[in-house]
Length: 205
Image (cartoon, rainbow, N blue to C red; front, side):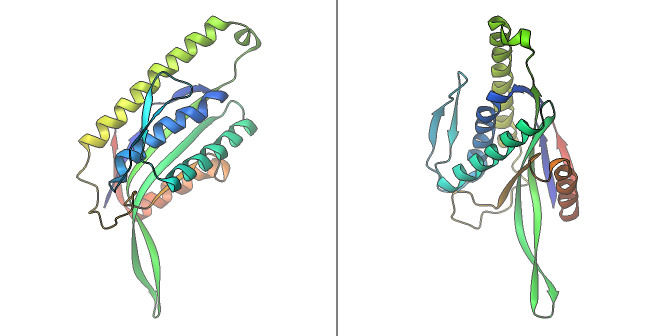
């Protein structure tokens, strides 16, 4: 099984913007990959002049908020470092491990990679309202572009999606990992896991 890998453009963010940027991106992807009986809920961003749609599932909301909390805490401890979040979808398969047991195997079929350059404003910037307004406007435009890119990709790339076999809101297992997971080792570990259980991924722009 091939894993479609979507690498979104790097977004420059300040600490106070990370939470809302991640909400916009993660909820947009989850809503378009839920494929179950969703209850769409349009949400106006708390920080940007845009709206996004949630799939109306409490478990999804909780998992997203937990990952955002974890990443924000990591950013506070690692100022100036690039932060990364991966949203991966997979199928569960079971293979015979011993005579009387089975081993779970994850077959990844799609992964979304989001990267953030966390800006540490200088003392001069903090006193310059015009600079911060310009930077915020630039991020809002970049975020809108990223959301449009997500919508384009989810509509163009569908052939790799496995058959739906669940009536859950989110029909496929998924995981959200990031820089906060084992610090710098998470990316290599995640890459190894994807490569072990899939064919080489097709890179998409």
